Amino acid sequence: MSPDVTAFFDDATNTISYVVRDPAGRACAIIDSVLDFDYASGRTDTRSADRIVAHVEAEALEVQWLLETHVHADHLSAAPYLQERLGGQIGIGEKIREVQDTFGKVFNEGTEFQRDGSQFDRLFVEGDSFHLGQMRGDVLQTPGHTPACLTYVLGDAAFVGDTLFMPDFGTARCDFPGGSSEVLYSSIQKILSLPDATRIFVGHDYKAPGRDEYAWESTVGEQKAKNVHVGAGRDRDSFVKMRDARDATLAMPKLIIPSLQINMRAGRMPPADDKGDVFLKVPLNKL
Image (cartoon, rainbow, N blue to C red):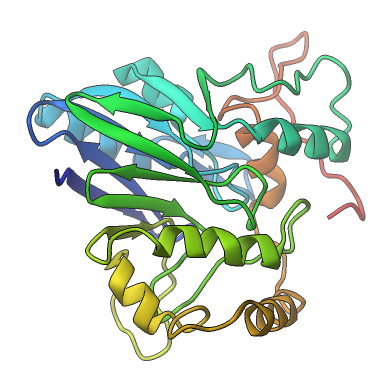
């Protein structure tokens, strides 16, 4: 079965969010939504999420799932806003607990911050399945970029988050806490073991050199043959050497500090103070 996929590209963060629809009905899932955030002013906005709301309402869709491929470090999730507007359950990988434990310490969250994943409605493990209308979705744990990364497979479509990029751009960085280039290589092989015709939908695109347009869809076959980091049978050792050297040159994402604090809470803001004001923390010399 081939789900209907509508992509929403966010220019500010180069993120692609997806509305995935059961072709036999009106059930849908929203994957990796974006809450707009202006760092300079500290203001949030729902413009990007409202584009998804408008699409869902125009097509009279029923949102059953709000899925996160991982705890994003480069954009804020709009899942709670979309849940309030459209319904659905918020899902992520069960290893979110590891991420919460790591960054709960980094941001000095204290004991009031629960590190058990209870902020989410569903914690997926390897081999889990779920339903989207009449479609079955399958869950692959694909860590390496972060410990909690998942790939969602719905029919002939696989939503890989940041694990893979377009073939001409390569693969995800692995230098965040809990990341591992060796683990990422194994996760990518798991994805590339899917049928060659499986459509691969990536979480970001930055237009590789020589390409003038943004893109987000390829296939397993194309990734196996052409991915500049893992294609054409590249072995584990050479990938790890390349990935680790490349990661050592990369700066932290611009929105990593607000993104992690909010996304590890399933997209919800930290608790307000007694005046109703919400604040984020900036840990010095921690990241």
